[in-house]
Amino acid sequence: MKIPLKSSHGRILMDNIPNINFIITMNQKIQKIENDVQDRNSAAWKKLCGYIDKVAQEEREEFSPLEKLGQELFSQIYTLPESISKLKKVKKLWLYGSNLKRIPPEIGQMESLEYFDPYTSYNLHWLPYEITRCKNLKDSRVSTRVLYGNYKNKMGFPDLTNNPVRYSGETVNCSICNKSMSYEETNQAWISLTVGTDILPLLANVCSTKCKDKLPKPPKGYIQFPHKGGSVLKQLPDEDEMFELEMVKQDGESNVPTESMTEDNKASRNEAPVLLKLIRKLWEK
Image (cartoon, rainbow, N blue to C red):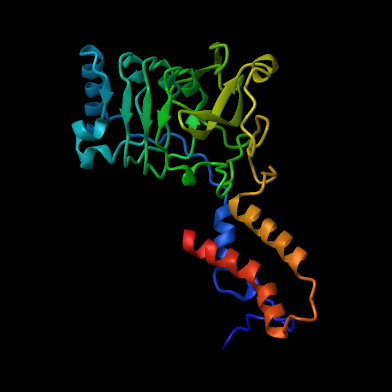
């Protein structure tokens, strides 16, 4: 059966276009936080820990686990060991094409870090707030489209209230004052901040309202306060929604018929904004 695409007024009916609603729903889908992501008894993990010790001992300036482990073993790494805190001299962190799902807060102790590259690590949706402690970090290359809250698609933040993040160990340090506390004591929150050359969604563990108030203000276009995420969170319009709003605005300004316009021209002008939005969505998929 042929699906009608136009109303009686000549407008394209978006709801009748196959898969459009599915595409929009997938953009808005909120994932669940996955804990205990790594097998710490595997050969891959043990080799990675040994590599970290060697890089630290030799005071190397670059850390590239793919080069050392090889693709097969590196693909089994889903988080970095907490021992990356030893990498005091490393300036460049190469994690291109990894299967990483998270990075521990100890990355904040890599005090010489200047360049951070987890590009095409499509399972890495967020970073720990502690990466902001890397004061020499000025350059980064991140696949931003897969990040929670990214300006292009506003991928939903998981709800920290019922699904908190758990690192290895029974305690966690406050992201602001470094106080050690149990997971029951911490107040976890998402916040988007500039790191290197990208704006990243960060997870902060804070011990008090005082520490929470010390979190910086996010850049324009992002949620302007620390939050718990979840489906009730209202994000600012994403790139596609802004595009649609602009097209609707232009459509409204130009939709007043004139005597010189033919009926076909009027219909074409009405259809253009919606059609452009559809083309944009399909192209970016």
